[in-house]
Length: 212
Image 1 (tube, rainbow, N blue to C red):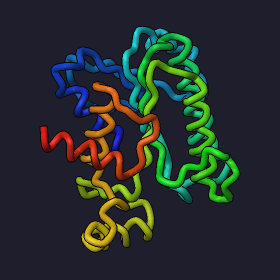
Image 2: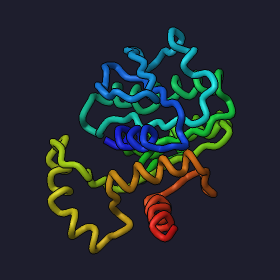
Image 3: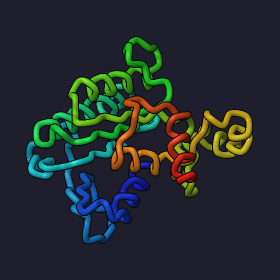
Image 4: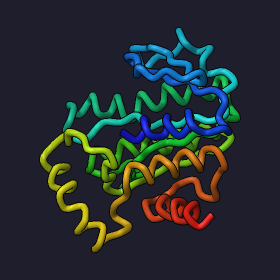
């Protein structure tokens, strides 16, 4: 959801001249800027390492909903996939800017009993330890899909229905997918003054853009 929106920002920006995406199947997008790399094993990038060379920015938005997959698979997707990608990028583009989509409540002490919080915290710690040129970690709260979609479970269907209420009562507890994607894109392109951006910080970027 968010990664696709970030991709659209990249493709439409005059400041971005080439975009490489790594996917399991073709997106069907045709654009002269786009280099689409089909790859099946997100724990091993040796066979496509050449595509990690000379990259300026990495937008990493891969993830899975809690409860959508078994515990071990959640850890593989959240932690192992992130580490493998970061390792390949660090090897070939150590000065790149790395933008990572995490989530509210990520626990960098790695002690939380909540699977999502602990695993996201592990991934965050690993990325920071890699010391890329710049690293930005985004921790959104509830992400409201700007484009209607089939929600992954009942709790998300309820949250979507109650979004107007939550937005009015807890404005810093929600963010739209459009606003989140735009903030991620702009921060990767122009930089920022914080490594970890909580939901309030992410929304503030959008407000600054509206002023400018």
